[in-house]
Length: 110
Image: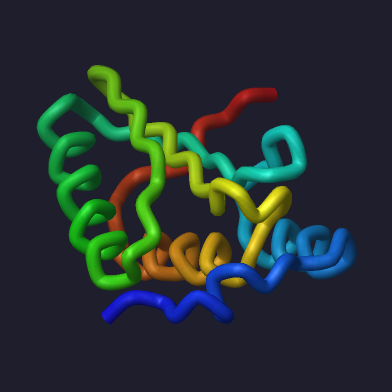
């Protein structure tokens, strides 16, 4: 079941985005219009399994992330094209991805 149009296009305020980032470790805002997080895995097979789980979760919402996979990690980027900012649909998909219970850990980019 996908999100209806009104749910998907509700833009989040800067305060809501800041609070969201405090609640959800590892996610960052990219260019003010996308959320991004890199998950690391022991190997390619685990990364591919995670991508399959993310794809299944995204399919239930009708909101599709960009997925960049390499041999030990997956970078997930979520945005609402045309919304000109972050929306409830973006944060709802983040919550679904985090519920997957994957063994992936946020990459340490410090």
